[in-house]
Length: 482
Image (cartoon, rainbow, N blue to C red):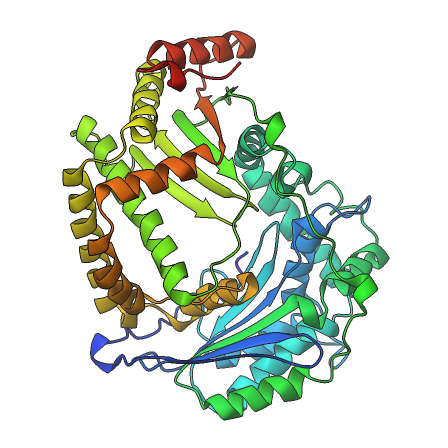
């Protein structure tokens, strides 16, 4: 969301790489269960990134009448008075605005969490303490005054109306590749309950979601670590822990046996895209930083090599037309995808090319030449990212750090990942990379999807897509399952 009052004209100075230094990180947990992380980092940025992450989003909207309310609460944090200032409308903005820079957004809400984040003008301990106190108020003290709730309803309903078509298309895709996953089971963007939910219902969800064990507080910048750590403890340490009976309920990953081989979407005005995807459960993070770095590097090597292969077959295509990605955890599962945003009338050649490419990758793997080229490309990209690290805003690093803390992973910054790449990648040849990719792809179930606005008969289109896939299969093993 774009937080009211936080879209100023001020711009943060561009940090200079010359003043970047190696960061020192402090991670801990308060007695009540709240987790925190402080990353001391020097740059030309005058202040710090300050973030509060609540591990509760759409997936927590389990009761009738709650759909969309975690999103509504995200808006109400910026609108509602608090018990400390019951007459101050937009309490968060009134306190935070003088101490922070403007930004396109100051909060995000997804199926698994809500994030609130600010970029401060200074690293003064007093300013940081005020903002930490503001976050504590946001987590425990909202009054849900009726005029604030009505304003929040209007904002969310407008936002959802603008995104409804795209959200519906994405939901149909998730239902095809990961049935039973949180984003399939929960109609995340459904705001039908937002206009009618009682204040009591909204407040009840707020108190269920916002508790110490569900919170991560992150500060990134050239701060006094000991003073910041003490301020976090002072502001959040008195927050009563939630009893174990009220702990969040786990969510399913997806139902593998319900994944169909083919799906199509025919959304008027929608995109044209052919995709082949496999989905698998999100793996547990490796036990060591080195093993986590190796896993990240293998993901990035494979994506680099596959994207290069797809682009080589279409040398004149614009950037982004074809490509590959690996996404782990964002939607509650691990997803491997190859895509082609084909031109009008070209869905069948696009599908056939994706079939041949994915089949060849599993059967024959990467060549030594393309694996070596991917190694050089990735190393160069990591070198550029490491050199530009000081230009990355503190608040963006705070987001990455909060995800790492929430997932039980290490935060591996580009300079550290580059060091791992230089040590590890020369020892991984194309044969090893191919075996790794083959195991990854076969761990999931393959699904072909075509999004084509001109499809009229869905059943016939699915049959045509299946025929196109099987007709281009270069080996019997590459035919779609029945």
